[in-house]
Amino acid sequence: MNDGSVTGRLLLLVPTTSYRIGAFLDAAERLGVDVAVGSNQRQVLEQYSEGRTVTLDFKDVERGVAQIEFYSREFPLAAIVGVDDETTVIAAKASKALGLPHNAPESVEATGNKHSLRTRLANSGVPAPRFTLFSVSDDPERAARDSFYPVVLKPLALSASRGVIRADDPAQFASAFRRIGVILEDADIRSDATSHILVEEYVPGNEVALEGLLDDGHLTVLALFDKPEPLEGPYFEETIYVTPSRLPADVQAAISATVNRALATLGLREGPIHAEMRINDKGVWMIEVAARSIGGLCSRALHFGAAGRLEDLILRHALGLPVPTIESDRPATGVMMIPIPAAGELRQVAGIEAARAMVGIDDVTISIPIGETLVPVPEGKRYLGFIFASGDTPEAVEAALRVAHDELEFTIKPG
Image (cartoon, rainbow, N blue to C red; front, side, top):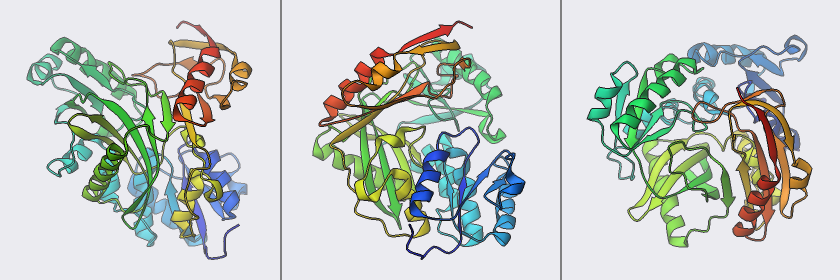
């Protein structure tokens, strides 16, 4: 329960497609705070929910902010938390309008647009790949001739590796360029992010992800995840995350220093951050920074003892509640985002109970229902499911995740 210092309601901004709402509502219940959910589709029972749900326009940010301001007149707000990329900007702008703790909206906007992020980090001293921007209307062959190699082509505002493709020569570039153009035609994002494609230098090396929490510009590193699978392309599907990192202490210190420089350059000062870097003999390279926590169900891999789960920490910070000492209560943990093996209709998943029974496995969750269509990356935007593990060492956790995955069998009708 909270200590009575929270006056007002917590508003969670959550797209209807998000995996995250359950974890945040559970955290709110543990903290004993008054909570409401703002989403982009009207809920069936909204009129009977006493303001516990509210429909907001996430695409038109200014309209969405006005709707939140109107809502707050009847239900005063103590904090607004944007759970996914789609809602971080509107949360920042609404918080600013209402005088609540927030990041500068322009800083959050920069993290939500890959070209803006690259532009803000350029000449900052933060190692980052060189880049260029093309219009989707540009001639692919001409763009390919003008490019350097190897490169990675990216949409400006899609997540989960959707539309991210490596190209090593002009033919691969032109093919990837056209393919991303088709993906953007179907993407449900603001129109200003569908008209361009970012092309950036491919950075070789091991990839890591850092989960952190900012408080008045001070970064607390909550977890540093190794990504043991090689992410070399042509597509970049996320799979295994394991923490704590097995990298040497000096490399981990360099990672934290690089993230701190990037955050200061961007002007981010409050709340959760998720950053992704590549490590090679030239140093730590900043690949992505997001003003939100880790996506999917991956936060279930993090356990902070008396401090609770990741969502507890985020809500405590947003509401100004005291945060207990943050330390993991397990030696090592990890998660596998189950890869989609083929396109088609998912007919059956066998071996779930056998996988759950494996030593070190905490849970196995299939997140796409039987009968739905599987779409692999780079077009796909959903994970097939998640495997969670814990153990005495990162090596044991990684091995458990791989063995459990081998127990799963997927029947897919091609289509």
